[in-house]
Structure formats: structure tokens, C-alpha cells
Length: 309
Image (cartoon, rainbow, N blue to C red; front, side, top):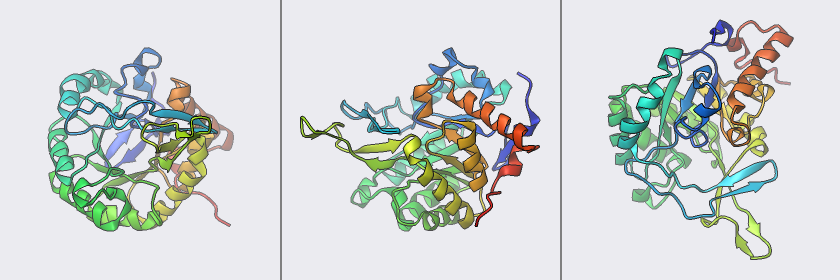
């Protein structure tokens, strides 16, 4: 594949050959999708969320379709960070010659969990580390790390001195003011932000009169959340001066352009991968087609160029 120099973006000093990254939780570790697409065409992959120890995840049923989206409560099923480093990272290395960037997504229930994982991953070839702060802090009564200034400042501040990779903090939308949380993450040491994670939702089977998900509630993603995601990216971009990666309901190139105009310098494609294995490639092609139609020379020229009334 000939690299399209118009599409290159830089995030925290790392060159991505294009702005389309497969979102964590929807692309596994890339193995299954590699049977259908050339992973080397992507700007990057944010791997399935990792925890310090292996996790089996939540009991089934743990996913459900909704109008224009889906609910999931998979529960971070994964083999653990050490197994990822030993068994999965070598598979992804083969695409580094094609400049595929590898982002390790980590989640924990204690600040110490995040710190240990960041130390381990800082010794590997991953290009960046993404902190999923949409997890309950068991040491603080179960409050989600990403929903308070104090909690997000604690976890980001704790891992910052240990992290020798660019540190991306993935923000939850389940807050009153995303700008306040974005500033807290930046002030604690985040190099970049990614948003949004899923919105909390519920679906009830009216015949059994029980929630469809065994965990009762789950994370809502897909096209239904896109307007909320675009708004939050715009608010965050106006609140901080660090790179932002936008996501939430992206299924086309024009969807991605909305996020770029709102202030994101790159995008992550998530739920669409469950519908089309080549969703990321479709989005990338769509961005290129938009640029040709509108005369945009470089994708980075779109960033933050929304014309407000």
C-alpha cells in the first residue's frame, strides 16, 4: 500500500499515517479482523481493555441490540496484561513495518492496578497507553475514576511518573461537565484525551419483565450516541490544549469529519466493526472522498474548523 501523505496526523509526537484507529473493545487484538482486512492500512489499533489479572467477564447475556446502537456489559474479559505482552503483542509487531501504531488500553479497580500495568507496558513496543477511567474505584466506595476531579487526578497523577509512553486518558460521558474532567486529566499529566466511552443504559424484556442484560445495565454505543459524542469532543477541545481522539457512533467518513471539525485530531471506530469487518477502511476511504470533494489538502487542516453560529 502506498502511503497517502495527506492523511498523516501527529499525536503526542507519534506519527500516525492516517487518523483512523480501531477502538478498544471492538477489535480484540486484531487477529480475527486480520482475516478480512490488511491491518497495515489502519492508523492504529487500541487493543481490547487489559487488566492486571485475567478476567472472564460478566455472565451472559451481556450484549443487546437497541435502536441505532447496542448495549454491552462484557465486563472486560481479557487474558491479563502479561499474557497480552507475551502472546498478543508479537502478532501485532509484524505490522509495525507498515507503521501500524499500537495503543494499549488498561483498566483497573485500584490506582495500584493502573500503576503496575503502566510500568509493565512502558517496557514494551506499544506506542501509547490509554487509561480507561470508566471503572469503579473499589477503594473509594465504588465511585468511577472518571466521574470526579479528585478520582481522575489521583489515578492519572499516580501513573504519570511511571509512564514512558504517551499517556491517553479515555473519558467517560457519564458526567455533568466534560470540560472540567478534561482539564483535571490534563492537569494531572495526560498527554492526550480520547472520548467518549459508552453511556450507561438499560433494556428491559417486557415479557420476562427482567433486564435483557444479566448485569442489568450496560454501555450504550453506536450511531445513537454520536451527537452527544461530537458535542463532548467540541467542549473538551475548547477546554484543553492537548490532542483529542474522538469516537462514538462513527460509521462513515462524514461521521469522522464531524469529529475532526469539532476538534479531534484522530478518530476511533468501534461498534461499526461488529457490522462491517472493514468499517475502519470504509471510514478512511470516506474521509479521503470528502477531502477530494471539498478541496481539503491535508486531513489535519480540518481539525477544529467548525464554524459556530
